[in-house]
Amino acid sequence: SNTLKKLKHFIMEECTKFEASVKVSVQVYFMLHCESSDYLWLPRSQLSTKCHGLEKATITQANTPVGTKLVYDGEKKRTLQVNPEIFSTFFKGHPFPNKTWHTCAVVGNGGILVNSSCGKMIDSAEFVIRCNLPPLSDGYEKHVGIKTDLVTANPSILLEKFGALMGRRRKFVESMTSYGNSLLLLPAFSYGRNTPVSLRAFYTLEDFESPVQPIFFNPGYLHNLALFWRSQGLRTIRLSTGIIMTSLALELCDNVQLYGFWPFDFHPYSFQTLTNHYYDDRKTKTKFHAMPDEFSHLLRLHSQGILKLHLGDCK
Ligand code: CDP
Image (cartoon, rainbow, N blue to C red; front, side, top):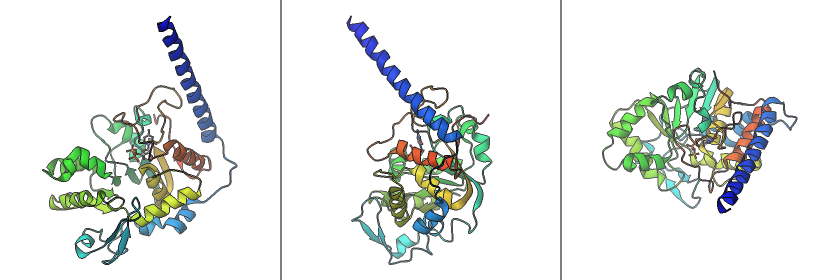
């Protein structure tokens, strides 16, 4: 009878989960296929006036001269006065042209990309943005593509995968070859611990003459973006990389196409179980990120025709 009780409990739990999955999917289906009568807001112009991503998303020698006091966006009490040595690591020139790109693909790392065959469609975008140094080879190409114009790197990956770049650094440089001559965007001034490892990434790529160009997020931009999303009703300790890159793309591109954004563990159409990432099942830190809430904002933007969320297969 104990086994029967356990079995009953298991079946009830599975039914509740399934019911919840169907509810989410039905809501998503309606949002994806019906035009919203919600108030329409114009993210490109609002983002431009409040966050100025085009000029301020990244640190450049032009927008951050020697002597500037940088305020870390993750640790408000921490500041850093830019000295000539740090200044020499700042991007020379302007990373984004003064015109908008026609189509941008922002590729999240969600397990929904598994077997999606979206690689070609992603690669057909004029500008492709990826998050957190995702793997592109080993059979993933067909589903996620290979073209990369900008890729972000969370310093925790540099710590875990490349020994914080304290020892031999060739493996790191070699792993970067899959991103061609893209921009590597690092949150060097978000937390104090990010700065030394981001600078080591910069020096490593420079010393090995890698075609990848490191560039740093501007903490002022990240701060303003967090305020912006808070004003839209999004409550989260830290914005996820995906929503940060989507926000930037809304300023830089006429058409924003999202792939790999689905923070749930079941497929919206087949209800099959999904891993959290297309390459592993490491879970998101729910303490910091509120991805389902972010997702509902992205869904609203989709239903207003402001961006396009791809959830199905691209066959
Ligand atoms: O470092 P972070 O947790 O922000 O991101 P990640 O797990 O490397 O994934 C990159 C982005 O893809 C996230 O920031 C999310 O916006 C998105 N994502 C999603 O929508 N659904 C998932 N199951 C996983 C990631």
